[in-house]
Every structure is written in C-alpha cells, then in structure tokens.
Length: 178
Image (cartoon, rainbow, N blue to C red):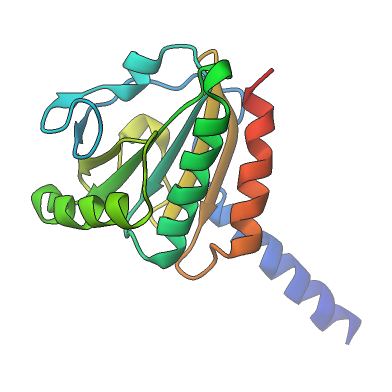
C-alpha cells in the first residue's frame, strides 16, 4: 500500500512538473504584438508590453472567455482601477487561430463585466508569443511583472480556475506594486 501511495504521489508530482511550463519567475518579459479590440487603440496592432514599459502589469492569456475567465477579467480590472496611483496596468490576450471571430466574444465580455481599465486583445495563434512558452494545456495563464521582470506565472487547465484561485491571483498583485 505504501508503494502504491508513493507511486501516486510521484505521478502527481510528475504531471504537475510537466504542466509547469512557461517563463520562470525573474525572467525578462519580451515584446509581442496583439490586436486591440476594446482598449484605447481598438482596431490597431500594438505592443502593450512595450507601451506599459516598466510599470506593474497583469497579463491574462486565455484560449476561451468563459464565465470563470470573465470573472477573472472583472476582478483584475477592479484591482487595476484601485491601483491607478501605482500606475498598474493590465491587458487580456485571447489566443486564437481565428482572431476576427474572437473579437465579438471579447466585446461582449467587456460590456457584461463592465471592463473599464483593461484592454481586451487578440493574438493570432493558439500557442501565443513563443518567448512566453505558454503551456498548450492551459486554458488561462496569468503573468504579472514589474520593471520588465516576471513576478507571477500561473497556468490553469480547463475547469481549474475557481473563485478561490481568482481571489488568490488578486492577492498576488501585491507582488508587483510598492
């Protein structure tokens, strides 16, 4: 029985390690281009990583904008609004092979979640920007950085993003502000 339990623990640890892809905390975050759908530059391609510079930034990479992702966007948008004095920024990146088709979904989320401080964007390709090494198994990946260095990188498979995990992510925003 002990061997079976040890094997199960080892297998669980191995599957967690296999999913723990992506940039390592402390790594520099690079530039990449998105199409702004709901932000101040709606309709244009730009680099929000470049535009936001060394400011504290929350970036949500999602392959779907379901209810839990919409809730995360709403909560992050509220945090950004509360931290305007810290010049905190955020943006959402829908990773899709059909960016035009995703635009309507993003506009709907922005309206329903009353998003005021967070541009919703599209990236052409499910893999996302290559240097970011976003896990192919992740439905949503949240990265937070300041001074161009990654402080938080958390990925969630479909169905794993719960309200408790959203609250935990909101709490981790303290790692990127003074």
